[in-house]
Length: 136
Image (cartoon, rainbow, N blue to C red; front, side, top):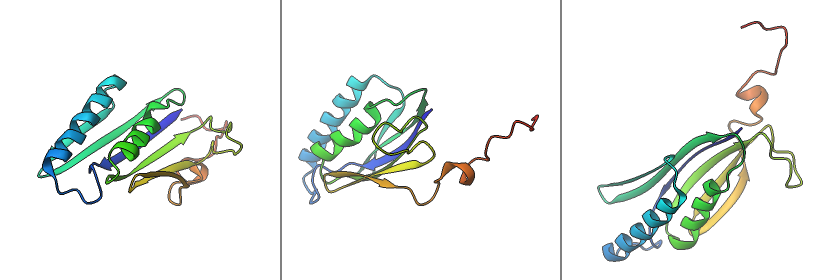
């Protein structure tokens, strides 16, 4: 299972004082999201705060989730946010991350993958270990 939950506040630049440039940045982001053809991304513009929310589960890893945050880092470097990912098949990158969440931190045009200090290891913090004697 590939589970993900994330949010980002969108700013075209860390200085972010030009509403025309912000509107242009937002339009580019909306066009990019349209190309992804998924219903799992929500965009919001309220009171001068532009944001993106994404959450869902897929049977297997789907790169568009992380690619969205990479796109934001590259094209809206004033943005910031967090993406939580749990991939129970993630043992192919040289480490075994199958029992932990990974945190992707977005800030100042940089997207960094980090260790999760809150929900990992998933078993036993989030879930109980498998027990074949349980009948519920």
